[in-house]
Length: 246
Length: 285
Image (cartoon, rainbow over the protein chains, first blue to last red):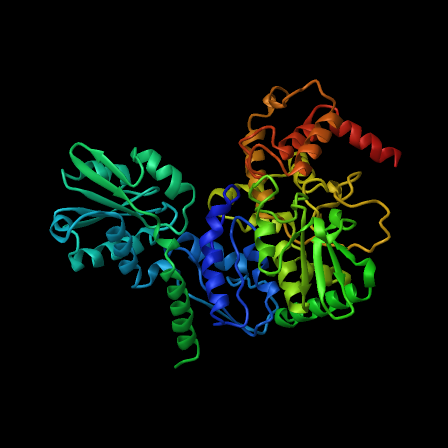
């Protein structure tokens, strides 16, 4: 399950890629993509499936408004339950909450910035989350990942900033001293935000921006890494084990 | 009926329906489906039915249905797959039954199930009020859209030139007359699938939200219509022409563009006189 877009085909690409890898791997009898803003629509997703047990994995990064409210409601899982259905539907946590996400953020940061270990320890890693004023939990996912990355000590400092809640990413960037900065967009797709609004609002010039004697690196989003496919499978397996009581 | 069994029954009924048509094949929205004696199926655009296969791009991987379905010929995103702008010029042969079903769900998600439910009088229908009423966040307001603006929004988005499905949920007063589902020859001697729409789509809900904002500045309607002196019929014709072209200079759902075909149709519905004209026609009928 992904957000999708009315305006950009690229937004759904990562969900299709992850689904295709799962399909090719033969892990499940059926694999169905569905989206909030485009077809296949969330509210028709379950109708197409003939399996007796369905695992729903939200390809969202935050546990918040979409994963707690919109997706369950549109799938007909939230009360009042709209489906006359005898099968078991297991609703899994969103991919962003998986502990391995910290590793993927670090992978993006290391692959993009040209900093050695000592330089990294003087640099700041900034995780950019969407955030929302509509959910108090949305930013929490990003905060806990940043805390975990801080403890790992690969970068001197680890911060987070948001598009739609405080602290805003612009403010966070301004507040940092003269250290080198690596910005990792904690987003699923190379879509509207990751490709357009964030670079525009922060005045970035591609992958590396030189500003006031420091380098600012901007990595591709985390959600397009192929390892996210493994996380989707892990979330389904873990939820399956819980559902079957083993 | 149990959902899991439903999907299986729908697939079986669809395959029987196609098999029974023989060489003539069946029309499914903008697709032409033809079965062979060997139990294989071929898909192509309905308008390419008469073209020799050699003139069409051959696709051998059933998964390519997704790439064909996701963008228009002009490369634009198709968030709603039933907009009548499916690209032409390809053929997908040699599909077995499950592959045909999967390809169909990629071209028109869940349409096969809805076709089956409709044939049995079992389509689950969700009204605009119910669908709009459960929305939240930036869409929380759409449930407040009522009366003429709602009717005009439905007529703008759900007419045959904008979407191939017919809304089964639309109130009787919004029934769309005079526009046949597009892209189909009048007398092709073939049976076409009837695929109703059981629930307002995300595009309509988004358009409804824009309409609410627009109606708050109701007085500007005549100034905003690209050519207020045009009769409503000319606006509708312009809208339908650009919607069918598959070559819009902006995305289908870009409602910031007042020349979006859905806006043009909306203006046509809301121009002074359009309502009186329609009611006049109804009275005569």
